[in-house]
Image 1 (cartoon, helix red, strand yellow):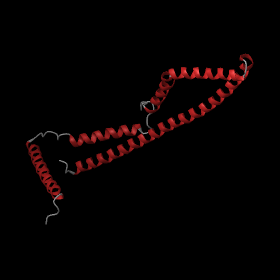
Image 2 (cartoon, helix red, strand yellow):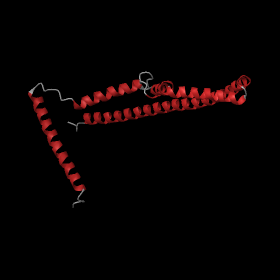
Image 3 (tube, rainbow, N blue to C red):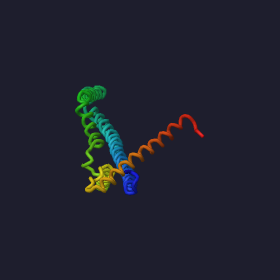
Image 4 (cartoon, one colour):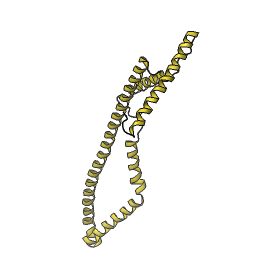
Length: 190
């Protein structure tokens, strides 16, 4: 019967624990989200910096190669065209292999950042969460387990009376709820 003081206290404790558990899980999810977004943003910024430096290096090397080839190919214009042709061929090769060389490593890196197992990086309060889960399960079991069977006639009679009272209490409570909610749409009666 839910109206006993022990069950009311157990239910109140269960609700408090469920609320605490939910808050802890939400905080854990928020922290993981911030960490993952930080890793992604760091990768994007560092990738941009590296790309900028690589572009400058490639530009300088290309100019150096063009100046070095100029006397051998008949002028700076022809050397620059050869360097440009080399870059175009390199770009075509890169484009043809973009899935293997670019998309697959990015996908793998994002998978590691976003989808890693929680066991690899346990939350600092994982033990506390486990204990709270066990406590919630025990409280729920205490509320929903059937009463122990009676060992004598007096206990059987008390259990039968308790079940009858619980049934009557439920009917009365249901009737009160019905009356309360059936009035809502029609206005207040006097």
